[in-house]
Every structure is written in C-alpha cells, then in structure tokens.
Amino acid sequence: MDIDDLARRVMNGERRALARAITLVESSREDHRAQATILGERVASSGRQALRLGLSGTPGVGKSTFIEAFGLMLVERGLKVAVLAVDPSSARSGGSILGDKTRMEELSRKREAFIRPSPSQSQLGGVARRTREVVTLCEAAAYDVVLIETVGVGQSETMVAEMSDLFLLLLAPAGGDELQGVKRGIMEIADMILINKADGELKPVANRTCADYAGALRLLRKRPEDPADFPKAMTVSAVEGNGLEVAWDEMNTLADWRREHGYWDARRANQARKWFEEEVRMGLLARLSNSAEMRSQMDRLGSRVAGGELAPAAAAHEMLSLLSGDS
Image 1 (cartoon, rainbow, N blue to C red):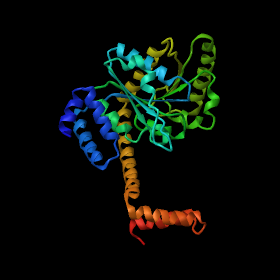
Image 2 (cartoon, helix red, strand yellow):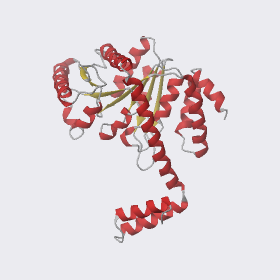
Image 3 (cartoon, rainbow, N blue to C red):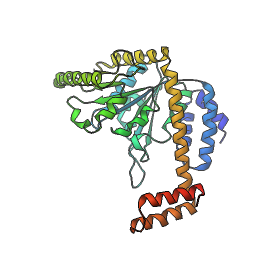
Image 4 (cartoon, rainbow, N blue to C red):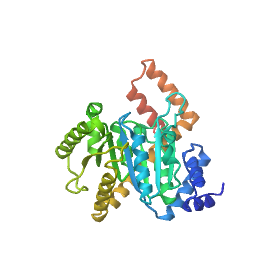
C-alpha cells in the first residue's frame, strides 16, 4: 500500500480513500498499525481543524434521528459533516450491528456527508479505540464538523469528552430518572444538554425538563473555560427541526469564546497529551497479550488466584515484577 498516495487522496477529499484509510487505522494487525502511524503523520501536515462534537444519550432518546436532522441542516448551510457512529460490540463475538447508517438514510445520500459506523470493541465509554485517529483523518479530508455518537451513558463517557471540542447530552422529556447514578458525572462534562422530542403533547413536558436541568447546571458547577451562561440546557425537535439552528448558533458561540480566550488550543493540547498516555497504556497491554511467555505467567498466576492459593493483589504484584524484570 502506497501510504503517501493514500494520504494525498484523503487530503483531496476522496471519500473512497477516506474509507480505506479508516479501515487501516481500525485494524489491529501489527503491520497495519505501523502503516497507520505513518499515515497519521502524513495527514497531520494538512493543519486542518474541524469542530468536534461528542454526542451521547440514553437509548431511545432519538440520537440517530437528531444527527440526521442536524446533519442535513449543516449541509444546507454549506458545511461538510462526518458522523462517526460507534456501535456496541458483542462481548462474545466482537461483532456489532452497525445500523446507524441505515437509520440516517437521507443524510447518507448527501455528498457533503460521510457516515462511518464502527464497532466499540468493548471499549469503555462506547468509543472505539481508534476513533481519535479517525477524527484526524476526517479533519484532513476537509470536513467542517465531526460528530462522534457514543454508546449509552455512563461515567466512562468522559472518554469522548477527551477527543471532542464540545460534549452534547441528548435527553428525552421527563427522562431524568434514566440518569440516576451517573447524573453528576455526565453533568460535569456536558457543555450543552438538549431535550429532544420537544413537539406535540411532549412539548410542555420538554420545557419543564429543560428548566429543571438548566437550574441543576447553574447549581452544579461553573468552569473557567465557559462564558457566563454556559453550560446550558435547550429544547429541540429532531422530527420538526425546531431548535436545531439555535442550538448550532449556541455551539458556535461557545467554541468562538473558547478560541478568543485561549481555552481552545489549551484543551486540544491537553487532550493530545492524555491520548498519548492512553496509547502507551494500550501498547503495554498489547505486549502483555501478544507475549506467549507473559500469557503463560498470567495463566499460572490466574489459576493460583482462582484456587485460593494467592490473593489477587499479591498475584498482580508478582506479575508486574516479572514485567519489570525485578524478580
């Protein structure tokens, strides 16, 4: 594979080349990982940046419907939109449904839109391990907005916040009970809460839910990188299209404020550092899994732990000592 040619084609905005590049970076083969690293270095020379939007929400809240309506609105404004829809993987087979593209039928037909479903591969927070690299490829391909749809809602959703500029939480009217137990963690990272399905008989309920969350956001926290009226809660209707343009304008207001006050570059720099550290951790785990000797030691110690001969902490200490060569 000619990596230089692939990088050139990606930066020229060729959709087929972008799809091929994403397949490469998502591969776990060692030779593909080496090629993906070179590819990442090549496309970084484009210097392009998109607005990275992370989106999460409880099942049934209408994420796919919202993304399609929102994406179509952005396309009508002359923007190119990439949607990275991370699907849940089976814990047994590793497979996934990858149905988001079929649920966004109208948006997927737009030349200005690129939709890529990816299996989460059991990654915490519903973010595929290579999603950040895929975001970089989409930026190099001159997409203006990259929207990352994550699996479910939970404390580990902070992972998507570490690769996005703005984190959006989508809720249904009167859906607050679904967030019990994880509410504080989500509220601490959400830049905007969007109450979807604010139409018909649900509109009054959505307005009350929005007011409740707006009050909770004011009480919960205020971050220095936010202007006075952020984070905020808003109502939208993906079906009717109401509130989408206002929400987009508010997203730009927040992004522009952070750029003007220096928080944009600082945030991205901090994110890059954290993902470097994450890559090191994942690389160490991969070496542990790929070494026959280390797997044998893990099996030996695991059997002793299962048999009650050794405490888990003591077994872990011994394994780490073997890795560091201290034993």
